[in-house]
Structure formats: C-alpha cells, structure tokens
Length: 359
Image (tube, rainbow, N blue to C red; front, side, top):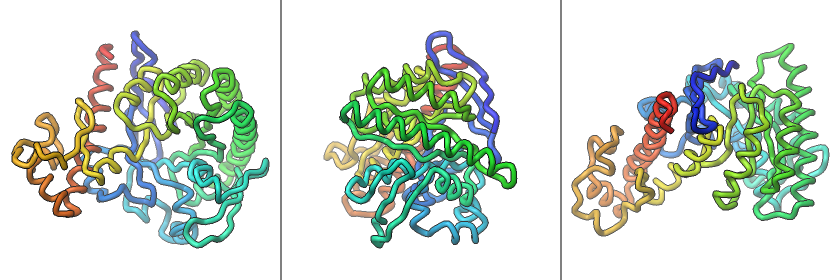
C-alpha cells in the first residue's frame, strides 16, 4: 500500500490524497459505504459502481460467524465471493464484540464471546484477527482493540488503552512475520483513549511508535458531543505521522465528516446513509428529511434537484413517498441510492475545495 498526499490545505489540516491498494486507487477524503455482511443493504455492486463508491467496509465479526472463513476461502476470498473488484477494508470485529457486553469476557490474551446466532463460544486474539482478515483477502485490516462506551470512567478507559496498545504490538509483530510467507492485507493501528485528553495523547503516541502504515481513530462515534469528538481528533492527528492515511471509524453525519476532514482525517465509514434510507429519510445539504411527511404527497420534484443519482434523475418525492407508505422495497432502494450518492458528491466537492484551497 502507498499513500500519496496531493495537496495540503493552508487553512486547516485537510489534505487530498491517493491511497494505492491491490484492488485500486482511493481518492481521499473518501466515505466508505458499509457492507456488514458482504453487501451494502439494498444495493447491488452495479449500483455502487454507478454511485462511484471506491471502497467498502465489511465486518469481520459477522463474516467470521456467517458464512465463515472456510466458505469465503473456498470462494477465492471476499472480493470473488462478493463479486466486487474494488478495495475492501475489514474491521477487527472488536467494536461488535464490545457492544455485546453481556455476551463477552475480556482478558489480556483476547476476548471470549458468545455468538448471537447460535450461542457457540469463540475466542479472538490479536493474531487470530489478523489470520481471519488475511483469509478474507481484504485490502486493509484493523487489529483487535478495546472500544469503551461513552461515558466511562478514566480508570476503565486507561485499562482499555493499555490493552489496545499491547494487542496492537502483538498484531503488528505477527503481521510482519506472516507477510514474509504469504500475501496479507495492510494492517492499520487504532488509537483509543475515550474523551480524556491525556489518554488520547498517550494512545496516539504509542500506536504511532509501533510503525503502522496507516491508522484508525476509534471510540469517537459512541455518543460523545461533537465538540469533544473534534477535540480528541485534533489531539490525535497532531501526533500520528502526517504521511499516513487516517480513518475516523464509524462517523457518518456530514457535519462530523467535514469537521473530521478539516482536522486531518482521510477516510470515514458509517451505516447512517443506508439505515436512514430504510427508515424513510433522505439527505441533502440542508440536513435529514423524512419522505413520509404529508407535504411530499403531491410534490413531483426530485429529492434533490442538484443530485445526479438514478433516484433523483427519474423519480419524484411524491412517488417515493407512495412507495414507502405502500411498504415497497423499491422506496428503500431509491433512498439508499440517493443517500450514498450524496456522500460521494460531498467527498468530490470537498476534495475540489481542498485542491483550490477553499475549505
């Protein structure tokens, strides 16, 4: 993997770059649609290509449990299984494991958890997480880390930080050895530290020292106020090596993404655009609006006259509203197309603004 910075803003930490991976080049800043189970909900990969998505994120925890490593390996890897020839980033599964607090036990060696599907027991170690994602054949993978809830006490946050650093060192060493004999995805490190300034600084310094080729910034999409998220992000991006890509994990509202870009983040992912669409909401620069509103019953204009997506080129708000109230899947499909294209257009515009030093 190679990361090339094309332009740095003179007004913020924002930058435009190109991230070179085995399955293609990613223009940054870039938003990644989330394909948790190997698909972006309601979308086909033909749709994603038309929307100009350049990379998707898939979930290690869910794919490990179903359909499982062996089936994905038998298919020739995740790209062939999904029939997607562009880059894939897989997360470590750590966030999903830690969100199931009543179903897991954390030790310094790893995490034991109970499958939400069938109740079977599983144990993830830093090394096993690298093995799973290598078997998937993703382009970028994340190490096992411990993400704490918000709010949490400082002692709990510090313990998670210590464990995250220890696991990161183990994963990095294992990855370095493993890639001598087989093709492995690029491993990013993850900085944690909750919303404590000193812990964020310590975590960023420790993860940067290990020498990862790129970074995830975790624990900043768990309910904290926006100002705290930006404050923590500002601390971290001052410390992580400036020549390496930074992925702000799980952040998906436009104001948060734009603020993250100004503070030096390059990659983003979230289920927000697809989840909102399934609940009948669409996104524009003015914010989130529900297609269910009565005011759209006879509104024969597109969702967004400025948008070039399939939904906006061909259908009215009145028609999509009708489909939604009729419980037709097509409504969710069209809203998802629009919401994802909204983010792709937003990233295009933002890259242009940075290149012209207007952000």
